[in-house]
Amino acid sequence: NAGVMQNPRHLVRRRGQEARLRCSPMKGHSHVYWYRQLPEEGLKFMVYLQKENIIDESGMPKERFSAEFPKEGPSILRIQQVVRGDSAAYFCASSTSGDTQYFGPGTRLTVL
Amino acid sequence: AQSVTQPDIHITVSEGASLELRCNYSYGATPYLFWYVQSPGQGLQLLLKYFSGDTLVQGIKGFEAEFKRSQSSFNLRKPSVHWSDAAEYFCAVGARKTSYDKVIFGPGTSLSVIP
Image 1: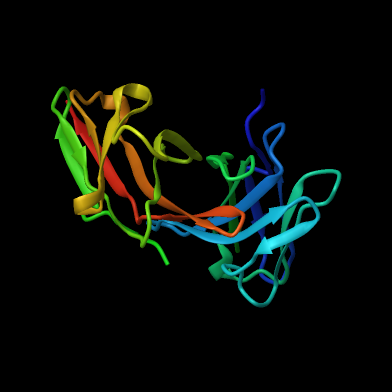
Image 2: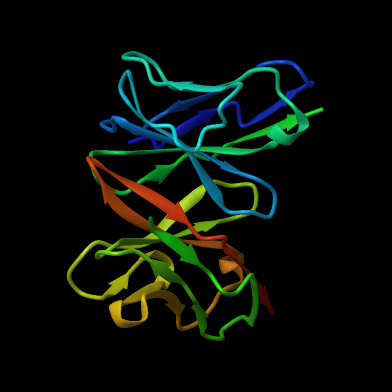
């Protein structure tokens, strides 16, 4: 049973470009969570999604950030017009209903 | 809302020595509690979790943690540390919110192991 998969593992973008981060949950998991980890800091919750629905986006910046989890395919975290402050590691986790979250390896975004 | 503190930012221990990493939480009801480990450049791996029942929880890699409600603590322990245990350790608390668990992570404790 494959774990949570994230791609790309490393992503480099110039200021103003768009970044798309993908997350495929573990088989049988319908809940996806996105977290951001800044250097030397812990994980900050961004958004929680179930299939085709955003359940809690209280941790998402109001502008430039969006997330989706379509009926088919991976969950996508999209960052438009990236700025240097967006440089961080972005982690996806998945779970079954009301259970433990399992994490992917993360995507490390660098904005030049 | 729940919160988590990890009082020790960085700890150094000798290989073979015992280890205790502290975690304190704040939550109005019985929480769900987790410890995760993160090696450099890697994702988070679940070490152990407490949902209910026995307050002493056994995890992987020889780790254990004890839930103490009176102290609002969930400290992680290992009797003999190995060099490969050097990593970042995160305590997390989950709260049942409507239909899901919102998990809040502590700031982490960085563990160094010296030969």
